Amino acid sequence: MNVYLNNPKEKWVVDRFVKEWNTYNFKQDKTYFYGSKTIWIIAPWLWKKIPIKYLNRNKVLCTIHHIDEDKFDNEQRNDFLERDKYVDIYHVISKKTFAQVEKLTNKPIKTIPFWVNQNIWYEIKKKDNLRNKYNI
Image (cartoon, rainbow, N blue to C red; front, side, top):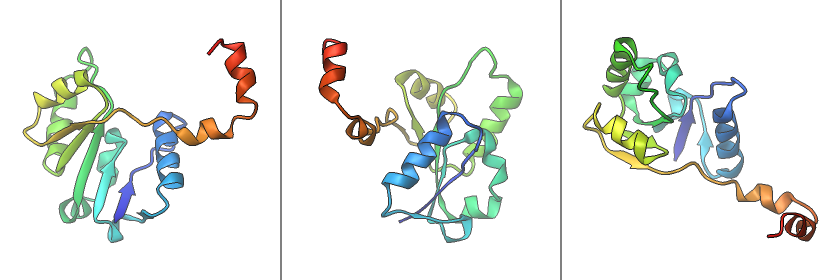
């Protein structure tokens, strides 16, 4: 399966998600738009950097991390609705975000919390010392 993730490169948590996806999903082909079969808009605020012709040609998954309703004005709503024309399915990380997105689209929505990188825990040396220190 070819998956393209839009990578914000903003030194924010989404960069870590992209890095971990690319590291631990080695069977996936991390390609550019033209070879993709699925485009994962993991940074929805940057969706307009993806050419429309590729959004039209591929399956599009869009992660919505959260919606700040105090700041969700008409401009943001219109941006959501414009992007919604190209999205096939949404990924949200919480029930609250599910309820917010459900009000804006009829597209399928899957709630999957972001993963815990189990590989980090295997890299820690002297786990017994940590367990004793934190009384675990």
